[in-house]
Length: 127
Image (cartoon, rainbow, N blue to C red; front, side):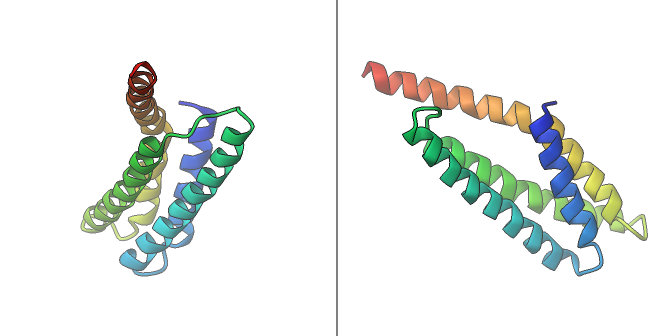
């Protein structure tokens, strides 16, 4: 678990907890907007880094990560609903779920997607 993903997981969990007093669909939409805004901001920072030669951009990786984030919010909404069937306050349990998924699963997913992107980039360079 990397510190960056732990921080991202904590941020997403905090957004989920602090919006727990609104309808679940509205709350999920708000979390999705926050996550997508962070993704777009990261894309702009990535472009700036690429211009200075510090990082390369991979459009496929970016869109795969954004799709993963959209799926994560959809799953969180489903988890919140399922936990709500058994518990009166499902928000905290869903927030813990989000933290664990982002903090533990984020580096693995990023690594998996990055290796696929590196392989594509190496194929493009040799062609």
